[in-house]
Image (tube, rainbow, N blue to C red; front, side, top):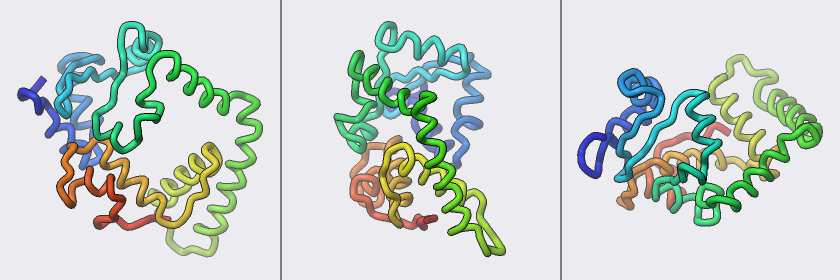
Length: 197
């Protein structure tokens, strides 16, 4: 489980920063310990579950054999009323509402909205362009579909950049030092990230 209190947090952040969390953190431990292994991250004992069978077991026994929890930084940024802080029946109820929107009837209403959003994106961002950053464009399109089609939130310029800063802070060390990922996420300050919208 690594060093006392810190555990393997530094290795986790190092891999996360390089956007190679699975390849450099999870995969070597799965090879050594199996698809379910324990470690210590951000001061908490943590069980990492990998693979369809392990995830099925975990999700079918949630609130029976296991209780999921999130790092304190996640809770501070997302709020005490977010789904990640709900347990038992409250969590099942909210999850059920989300699943309803992805049912056949929900998708019947959702798919035309998604098609319209994709068409608008292609007309605005791709039409007449000699060069396109596929990664950035696809990331912005996915973000727009989730926020506008699923959540009904209009994506204004700069929203994606703010969202990414908050996301960086979700698994950051809970250090409120100016310039830290967690501090930037709390204040919403840009740092050096460029918005792709």
